[in-house]
Image: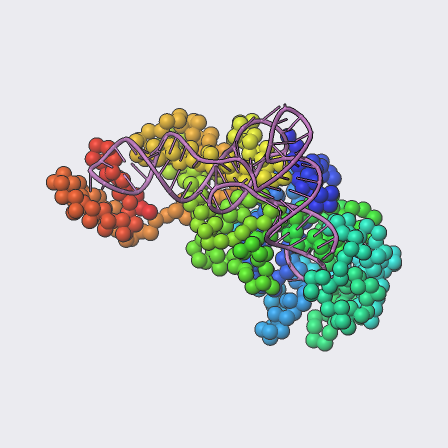
Length: 493
RNA sequence: GGCGGCAUAGCCAAGUGGUAAGGCAGAGGUCUGCAAAACCUCCACCCCCAGUUCGAAUCUGGGUGCCGCCUCCA
């Protein structure tokens, strides 16, 4: 089977062939660090994390680089408001970024270049663009001459003559800065420093990089002239990625990336979640409100990555119930392995997907792979996980309620391991610790005593008393399970 | 105005020519003193119209609606 993915550049699905067999160079256009990440960022980060995990699982050696844009007007504004510095603001939100991503189980990148650490590379690139006639200085600024790059527009599929400058209502064509451009479509590579702003010295004077150039420089610096996958949100296709192509390819004469992948937006009431609309929920707001990180991950992965997903409380509640099922399946080995006679449940490697050997030719794994090979169809992949989890949940319940399963321990072991391994490819993990009950409320012996009292009440047909005891325990998070034969077991919620 | 995308059950969502995965919610049943839990079963002809085809959710043409981008954005 071959992995196919949708390439924004060609507007179709293509089979994936990296530049160097077995190796993948991947760059994800990360965040501008001027505030906490919201659910839109979460989606992008989780999706590219899954793409990366899946490529690894498929046997590729993936080098994954993600940048931080730490020079930007918005960071400066924030610093000004707070009376702090750009660096202080950037550091704080980079720190917050890592905290959020750790909770979401997003793997660390191999490298996190920052714009402020790449000033040399940025300046070199601008010089080369100048020498080749793609850039021109103007009063301390340097601009990219868009019309000099014949292929401009190839990624976003637009022609210069069709573009309506200012159509988004965000470009003030009367802005004095814009007057320095030879052409309204040109964009800044280097901006002359305004008083009080952080600045780096250069042959054009004191200044700082424009928005797009840092990515061109960082990719070249850390990964080379041509990479395999360049990823980001679809709101970056134009102008950001279009401009990156113009900058990089004008200098190197080589394709910047073989495959351009873009994720769809998170919407709220059908509208894009964004800072400017003010309709955003930050990752930490959501997680701190009690939503499990894996629920957010599932919410993101239930849809195809290129389509928009609408964020609602109902959606999260629905996913929460789904996650409970998946979690039951993932914890199956911990809860039922010993009674099933598995002998290694005390081993330190027990439950570690890295130590599990599963049959890659099984129908289940093949179906998972077929779905994921088709442009990372995580929804199809999840269907496979749910089938496994449902069956394990069912067998687990049989073990709890009837004392025996309908499937032999060896097969259950295979199914459980397959589930754990495939879930891991999607970054979905459950731990017993997360399930640990609140201790100290009611003691086990206390519960057993109450159950005995209820048994006596039931035997005397005093059902009001029996129900009272059940309700009282229920209020304390103790669930009673009446089994055939008058036996009652219990568990903590 | 230009470019691009989407439209499948109450909700979310796969499926791109052979008769609709999966999740959530819901219904019926078994069990139970009742309940809960558990288990079993059920639950769509795919926005509209016209074509192509033996056959279309899937292809073509035309509509309708929604969304994104057009230099802040993941």
